[in-house]
Image (cartoon, rainbow, N blue to C red; front, side):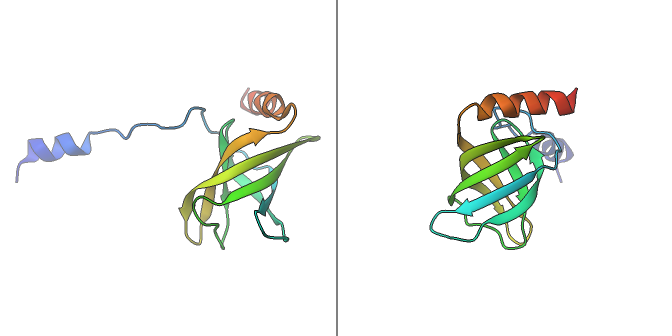
Length: 116
């Protein structure tokens, strides 16, 4: 066994692909999968300016497009997103594709306030 080679492999740090830092924040979220009438209501387990993670027993398929709503204090943020990670029977990562109106500004201010 080559200990030095094993140690080299284990010391490799995965590359961070996220543009924005994520924060452990639970906020109410409603998801509407394209082509489905029933909303999915849950909470985020983490949130960033680029997306969120939600815990779901019945997960959505990778690549699924959704319309969603986030309640940040007293403000509603409406967004378009896509499922980018899927952990069966646990949850989904959702990337924000578009935030309506001043949604990006509201989200940025909310995250700044909760992390201050």
